[in-house]
Amino acid sequence: MTVVAVRDARRSVASWCRRHTLGGEGAIAAARRGSEQVGESTVLTRRQELDLIALVRDRYPEEFGLDESGPDDELWSRHSLTEVINRRFQVSLDPTDVAGYLLAWGLGPREATDRACGLCVAEVTDWMDREYPAIVRTAREHQAELYWVGRTRIHGASPSADVLSAISTRGRTRFLLTAPSVDPSLPREFLLRLSGRDGRTVHAVVDGSWTRVEWPRRIPARIVLHPLPSCGRTT
Image (cartoon, rainbow, N blue to C red; front, side, top):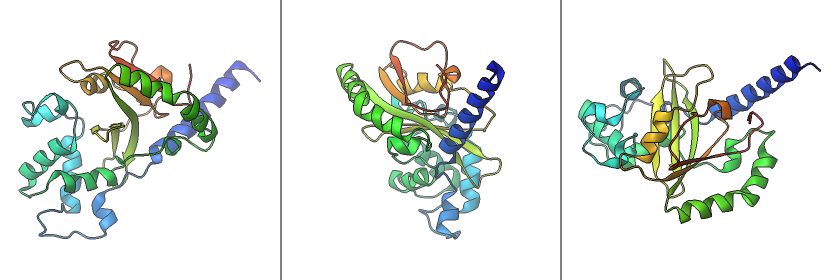
């Protein structure tokens, strides 16, 4: 087999693995409910939900005047999104209501093996037993938040949207909606904002949504990335 053939085979495996990761469970929440439920102040209609996705896609909270909410609002959270929703649509949602939308968009907690394609499950299981405990200990020693970083796609939105998410082991969720692109890199800005204005130390397990060559080349030492095993990885 030639070098080119090997490279093409690896690229095909990486593409298949990534498609599995992006498949996720992301969908429009209104589609899951199966109705518009017009008139309820705690539920967005399908049209409102689609407008919301378009509104915040590729934008940050400070662009909506939320820059005084504190260092935790560098990326979107359910609290900052709640504020934008209530202002925009004149409704009365609370963060608990908005959490349901985030779950529908694929932002719920996921097992490590759920972030792996069928070819990677055994390796991920072994990694969780052998290497992950040391990552947890190191993050604790650094007094750092430990996040799981990945990407899902919201099905049902047009144009579609990808959700870059960071979900901590403490249950904190930070995210950014972006326009899909072919082989996108892991944004450096996303990681910097995860660390916050005050430069907190963060550890992040990065799933197979990005190969190693798609990671940012230069990031501060306070941001420590750990690759989740993936058949699509290149070292």
